[in-house]
Length: 85
Image (cartoon, rainbow, N blue to C red; front, side, top):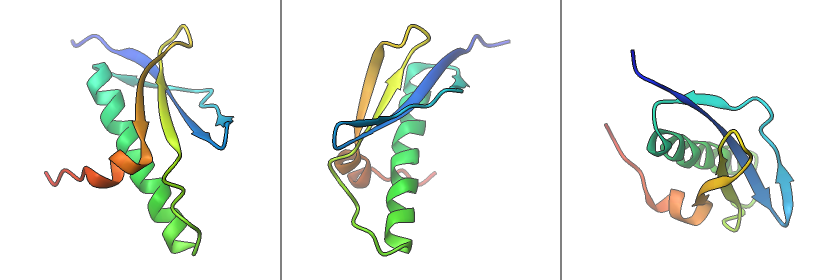
């Protein structure tokens, strides 16, 4: 059985933090960071579908159980990375 850690994927836009209060279990920080990138792409897709701007200045902040930000995913970077499995 693999060990997991809980990470929280917060969204930061225009100095407003949208907090993830529930978090999610991941096998690694890399897994949480990949999920943050996918969440950023999903949010951008929703913006396009609704005719809103992409807001490329947004960020996904990956925080650990202590609330410390351990990784940051810029929406502009997430847009450039698309991994087709």
